[in-house]
Length: 186
Image 1: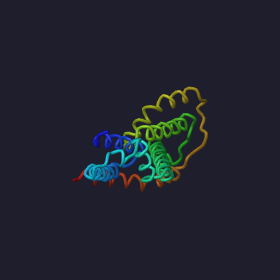
Image 2: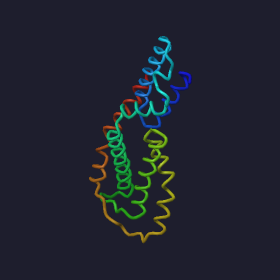
Image 3: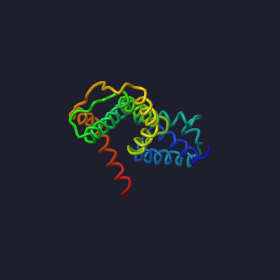
Image 4: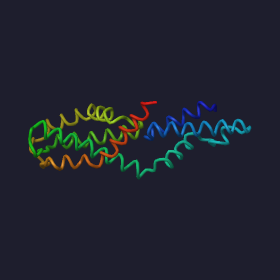
């Protein structure tokens, strides 16, 4: 297997696992240097990455970003998205309490499930793309639930609770924005 192919497999695996772009570039540079050093020393690429390149990339990704940290980020971002939806609902209806019905709850749960599944399956998306994918996929579920439900409110969500749901995701959103700005500027 060529160095370019190994780097492509590793990049794909790391992006699939949601490692940020700056870390992927750093890891690729380090792996490329190891592969070059190995070829200069007369060793094969198999000596560096082993027989299974995918398993090598996966183990490096797990070491780089452990599952509890990825899970915490995903839960925080899910709360962030739901908080913005609830805040937008309060502002749209011009009220301090949002009556949450079965269709609203279905929409939020489906949005979270689709966004998390998309993130786990395809790797990291930007917040806007993830939200757009989730919105497109869950609109039908929310409309169908609204059509089938009685229309009564299940519970009310105060405005302060909607704002409080934003808090866990703010550090991650700020870090993502800073990383995006840092990588965009050479």
